[in-house]
Length: 297
Image (spheres, rainbow, N blue to C red):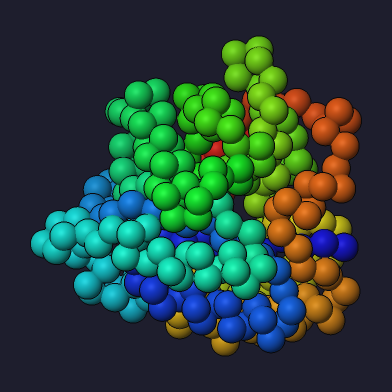
């Protein structure tokens, strides 16, 4: 049984403080991971626009956004200028690769990708992806091949840009087994490996068993459904106030017999010719506001 640890790095503070903390925990558990970076300006404060999305306010109250992200981060892009993550944290990003982990693209501007895609259309999707590829290449000296969309926002235009820009592997969607995406009848050669498990911010703070003990609940979930899984964690959560919880989660998965791996290592064991072809559509996930990219047969 393999378990991919997919690390989404959304913010400047998450990069600067959360990533080094995660590297320490992963090293102690001898656990490789796939780190996906936001590479442009941190405009987290502009997420205030999401207040009108169904479910957003309940998520804010459950996950203590101010406590986890901090006031300064929540002002970036509004009252404070957004720091350029890729340029100010380039050494940290390169250090992740030097430590033996897989690295890839999350986005250029997280707030713009997650909030502006619907009205920005194909031109915005391609422009943002091109900027992310250029900045990744500037930091690492080679072009990226792995992508994981910010907020699991991945319209058809983004899927097409992903293929055109040379990505070969992605985790842009939620639920189900690996597949090749189909857009307008065209099968794209970008292997999609969906996130299969709920994230901590989706289950925190509820009145049920999951909300009271999310780590125990996740461990029960993987014990009841053994097999390959993809778990998405966030440098801003598991790398900061939830670091001890993440440590306990890794230990629990080790006891269950899981082997930690990266997206590329999992993909290497798959036969692409035998994979299903699926169309990516919008759908919902319990505990997360708005629509996300999900795959259908």
